Amino acid sequence: MRSPSGVLRAGGLVVAVGLLVASCSCGAEKPTAAPRTTTTSTSTTTTVPKPTVVAPLTGEPTTDLAAAERPALVVKIDNADPPARPQLGLNQADVVYEERVEGSVTRFAAVFQSTGSDPSGPVRSARMTDIPILSALSHPLLAWSGANSRVTRAIHAAPVVDLGPNVVRDAYERRGIGGKVAPHNLYVTTSKLWARAPEGAGPPAPIFTYRAEGAPLAAGARKVREVHVDFGVTRGAPVDWRWDANRRGFARWQRGTPHFDEHGKQIAPQNVIVQFVGYHRNGDADVGGNPVFEAEQIGSGPCWVLTDGHLVEGTWSKASNDAITTFTTADGAPIALSPGRTWVELSAPGGATVVG
Image (cartoon, rainbow, N blue to C red):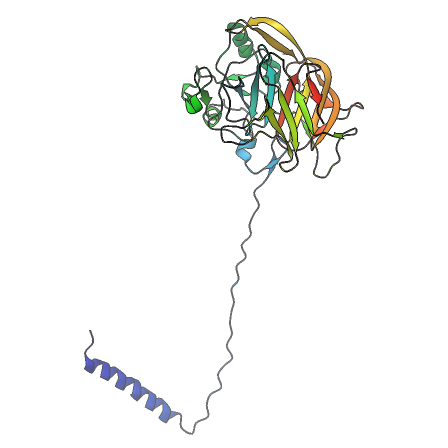
């Protein structure tokens, strides 16, 4: 700490200097201050926008370039009602196929590519109906709980990467949430399966045509409020798709109740395709002795395309297992969908009706 005398000495120095300056400037012309020159340095920050690409299975732009380049991942998801509901992953899948399996029970083939779901399920077995779906997706990864020996041989012979629990055990787990019990409680982590994709695996080719923003709907499109799809009258999952203008999608109802996922979010994709296909008994039976059905997806037949609150009637066509199914109007033009998620209902002829 400075002493008081030190403070006084400092003060005296300041006074002395001040007197000296005053005495030297008496009678002298005051100098003119030179004008100040101020230099302002400005820096410009340029924000480079992230590059965007179009996700192949939704037609939507994305900046997640890594996701856009990864292969499709198909997860077989249980739809036994009520033991499998609510499910996980159905709202995240780019495309979901609903197929009749045994009796009037349906099952889903959920195709993930632009986004994943950790976890997803319940995971169930594959069926012969899955072969034409899988084969058109450019060697997709497959999450399944197995199958009988005939279906297993067919899957292994198809252009599919088997990533079932026997191959990637740590990607699967049994969950007892909601009181679910085996076989309705097996779930898979999609990120762990993508991490096991073989070297060189790439994205699928686009399987739908999409409308540009503001482009008109296909010729013949008519407004529709609700479409009912029924896979049988004994039991299973009768479905209603109701246009929801607020969400710009078709909200799904199953067995008369809103179809929510485990997060409490109702399923409402932008597009629903009702693809009318024949079904035949393929000689297999489930554990209860019910005959197993197989969809006939090679050839052609009628289809309904629901998009943007409208229904477009057309024709589907598929030449072979690995060919992409096309959906065209009466004059042969592709039916363009709204960019977003799509559900495909593999319905038997006469299995769908327009409610309003």
